Length: 590
Ligand code: ADP
Ligand code: ASP
Ligand code: MG
Image (cartoon, rainbow, N blue to C red; front, side, top):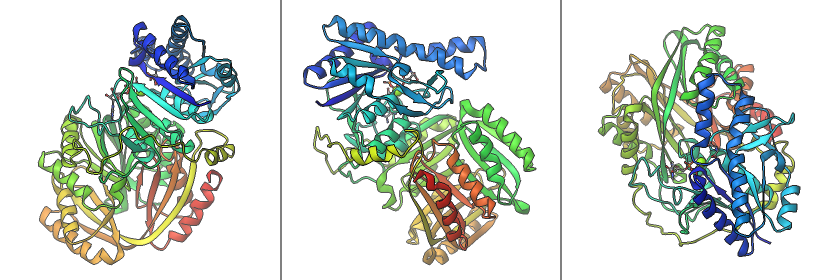
């Protein structure tokens, strides 16, 4: 018998009328011949209210008690949902995370799922019940209640769909699908019919709050077709699948994280191991760092910046200050007023000109880019928070995201369930369902690096650089613009070795025109890429790379992270050695 998982978010169960409406949807699905598992969030803003209550008592509540508190929201809604279904004449039973057997680790308030037992759910389903599971919660080895992180009911839903081998996981919410960007911020945003796991994963982790990014990790790992749709209508929403029927666009969406904070460590003695000292302390606090950028400054001392979610700033600063002392760095600075704007698209890897188009549009709108990182399928820039919305609008416009792509998709196209068996095979080898999986580690020795040093802090520089490099017929791979005040920032990029002479020439010309401090380059670099699932959300990946490379004296020159890959650029003569080391480090996850 087909099985459907239906997840209802907070607004979709905000009052009893909405609970009854959701109950009717589930009953209808059952009457159509499906077994139905519902995953339900806390009603309305209940979780926010619980957070506020805790804040009225202490600003440092214990994680364990916070989870005890937050999990009550979902317990209320599952019970009401079961009553609603029963009152409408169908059979239903509500279950908490513990009752289902959702085992997690003990990282309170952001626990990761380790295993889920299906036996109990299956028994109730087989007896004709609609099973109503509390989202967002689990239980650790010691019977402590845990929660998965805000928005985590999506992850519960997709995880249940994965273990139950559901035919579809329907995410009912207050929008009718995934849009090119948050329609509440930009009304011109357009609903997309299909999107790939990789693109959705990036968008979600770069700020598209419509899905919890870890839910997409499950989707991808276990090939769960996810249908994001409206609770308030029956129209087809957006399918998240392995490979959408290609829409010929370089960019499929844009996202904004308004509340970021930047931390910079200045005057770091430039020797292997300093990054490890910093990021091991951050990872120990389970903080996912983002946009790691570094540059070599004066007197062989480096500057490293990274961003963290604003609410993690105090915690991250504590860790950074400890590390700064250990490695005798000169200063730690931070900025709480930054926002990150990103564009995402699988087509970006093949198309040139995406970066410069974005940088030019931002420059023309007078938006100063404080830092840049790119990976194969995304570009992120950091700007001042006051300019965040206009930056998003500008970027959305320049890529024409409001327009339907030329390559039209079939309406109602629902892709079949993918390679579920092999995914389950993989899982048997994983201790925890959310463990890191590494698909591949690659080495690219074909590139060189060019760096413009001491760039002035003004809009338009990045646009000019990449326009002129493109005009010289050069395809740029990685781009990193580091943060720095008083002309201490730099822009580095990598190109094919055969393009180095033209690239250096262009960079030197621009350095003169813009009054940069100079140009440095490396004729041959080695780019190593670690590809898999959970690369960024497993906070230890970057740290393990820094650690293992520093142990053998290999310095990381540039790095970029995304949800599905982490790239590091090292000395061109150290590529093979670095590859062997990374293969050894990540062997257990392969
Ligand atoms: P739920 O409570 O159902 O989980 P959320 O509030 O978590 O709902 O997610 C839905 C919201 O996500 C929408 O109301 C919308 O404002 C926001 N959102 C952000 N980015 C996007 C996007 N790219 N597409 C659709 N909605 C988005
Ligand atoms: N109720 C939780 C939250 O508000 C989980 C969720 O809704 O997904 O974050
Ligand atoms: Mg949500």
